[in-house]
Image (tube, rainbow, N blue to C red; front, side, top):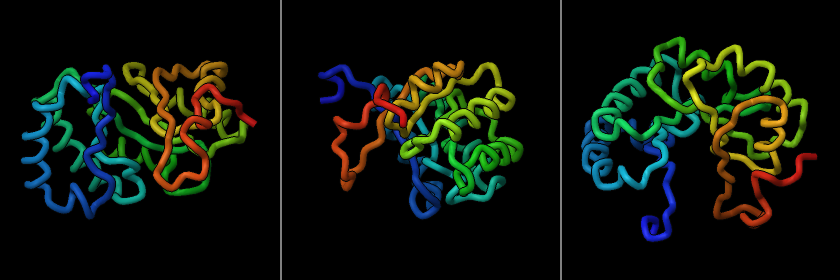
Length: 187
């Protein structure tokens, strides 16, 4: 169905330490099996969604390096998406948490992921716009992998070069997915 309609997939290989990282040999075997089958359907691969909630920086860096090397060998043309931090402070899912992971050794990624679902204050986005360019290497892209309510257009207006935006929706969301649009209003 995905191929027939021309869609591409942002694949997330793991969510937390109890799933993909709990059994690394099984995860490696699964990746070796599945990536060749779906490679042409992928617009990006994310190793772990929101790693700051589940891993200390050094542990995530070691896991990321192992999985990134395997992805590069099986799907070298598919971007690796990493980061997953929010514009809201405080919390675990912060730019500082991602910076600590990079300092611990996470280097092999192509796209920096922003999670902006629920961020409705311009001051939070402005703070991100001020802090991110000093940290972002020039060869990395920026995607909003969880967003809503107009963050894409606002961040672009502020000069941040966001290339893609994905609307976040979940089965129990009170708002229908049609209301959440990257071009929507920002209060």
